[in-house]
Length: 132
Image (tube, rainbow, N blue to C red):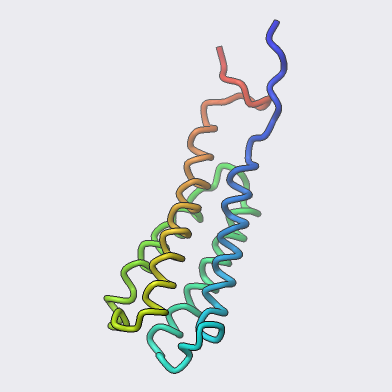
């Protein structure tokens, strides 16, 4: 008889979504902390995306384990964060540009990990082991 498998299902996606909440809060605060409030396209972009990423990550945490759509949406927002300095023409400003590129990559990877966790788990039974 096999030993029971610990049920850690959902821990990874909760961690990923929780970290995306932190990143969303950072994006919200970054124009003030990094002092680029006067650069309106960058500041407004980060404030709006910070609120949105936080909101979607909270929805992911509270919507149930098989609802990865919120994470996939955050992955798209992560991609936008990476390209936004160039699309919104603030790529010549080093601080907001690198802030958005690094934060965007992190949001993208965390959101992808959260969504992928739900997809991998679809073929498992409640105790976390594979059906035979």
